[in-house]
Figure 1 (cartoon, rainbow, N blue to C red):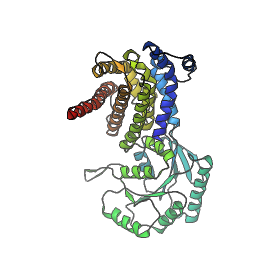
Figure 2 (cartoon, helix red, strand yellow):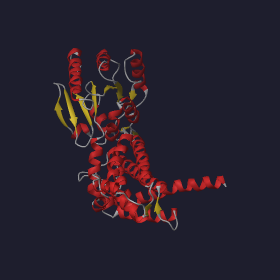
Figure 3 (tube, rainbow, N blue to C red):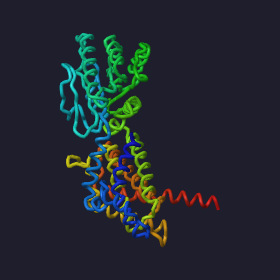
Figure 4 (tube, helix red, strand yellow):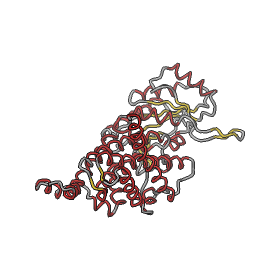
Length: 423
């Protein structure tokens, strides 16, 4: 899915680059045929001049399209009353779905929660009471799962989390029977919640393993929020394992949706983004196959801004007015793209003294450096958010420029080292 997203960025922008490439070719003395001129005039993609005129608008448009390509994941979460389902949901996802979502009834006991801009839906069941009959509960679950499949791959429930409070004395037949029934329909991950220590949770884990339940891997021991016992903090645990196992189980078509929505394992977001950057760098190399004079470096802008939009979509970065961290506004408000452009021009003169042209190698290096620097920035923003210390907008541009400079110099230094060893 990441590779496809990168190809979509490249395809959409390459058409718009044709016209600019024709003009560059004429300046470089290359002959241009009537057929090529006609193709350039009819190109339907973004024009470099239009992107330069309103980078924010173009990025917003590209991100909207990238968001639409993420797919949509659906998770059913169940368990007896007191299992802490809502706390778990809000700890895993980048927005508190169980608090902000507007629930829509699916069955008598199941509601679907959605939040705009988050490509994951939660099918939340009311807490199962011991007086509820297993047959009715199981029938309700099967009805919800069957109904979800009628809307296509993005609508079906893809995985179920079954939660058991680790403080309960034993594993009940009620739980095992419901888990077996769910596993007949969808993959099930069994989550032990509120695990303050390893005593009773490990006993429950052993009892569950003895039941030989049809679950995906062993039970995951979790503590969704920090707890304090006798004044000592007990940090959250198990959330990373839950996210990674869920990601491994989900169909490829919806992995990017889940990676976007979860807010625990930033590394998964970065890995997806690295793939996009690699594909876009390859597309930039193709553009630079015909050397581009440095004054026409903006020919890469549509591709690069489209790349940043795809990274935003993967990380779940909000560029709208409702976000407390307005990444793009922070950059553009300080003339960020102009500063980056000057930095690129300075680097070009260092790479090819006296020539200052962008060839395939330089075009790829510039694009890769910008993408990798942007990934570092997004990662840092999310890391600080998780620590409750949001990154100030005025710190974003210096961070990006510093990361860009280091990323651009790295391949150059490696090349120099290789030449030194060869000599």
